[in-house]
Amino acid sequence: MALTVHRGVSIVLIIIAIFYLYLAFQLPSFMNTVIDADTIPKITGFLLIILSVLYFFMPVKETEVEKEKRTEAKNDWHYILGMFIMTFLYITLLEVSGFLVTSIVFIFVCTRMLGYKKWKTNSIVSVLVPLFLYLSFTFLLNVRLPTGFMPF
Image (cartoon, rainbow, N blue to C red; front, top):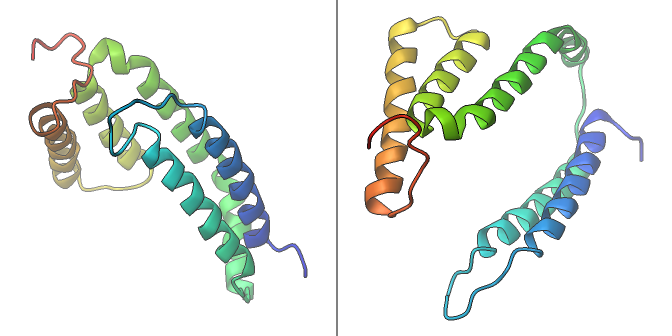
């Protein structure tokens, strides 16, 4: 069985899933709860392992066009670096600026960086998605998200 690209990715995902599950099993459990804080991370970890194993055994026949696309993607390293920088800035500024402001800027800049050109649609989505998430978490689930410098 040859080690193709998708099999290599599958192996990396299995390793990540095993480490993720190790961390999920380190989460403390609480008494008198049906669904504990570690339930969703454990389900996610096992699901990632199952899907990675399925991906490993999935037959893939790569055409010349697909091979060329993969070599073209190697030239896009600056997009990957930009996304890492944006994610790092998002994590760093989340507490200071708050969820709403940071998420709006993050979504807008990332979609622009990845090539989405429609300013109006991008602006609407960048505002409505974080606003919907913020209102859902705050009022429906009673989960407090970082407010930053915003008074609400």
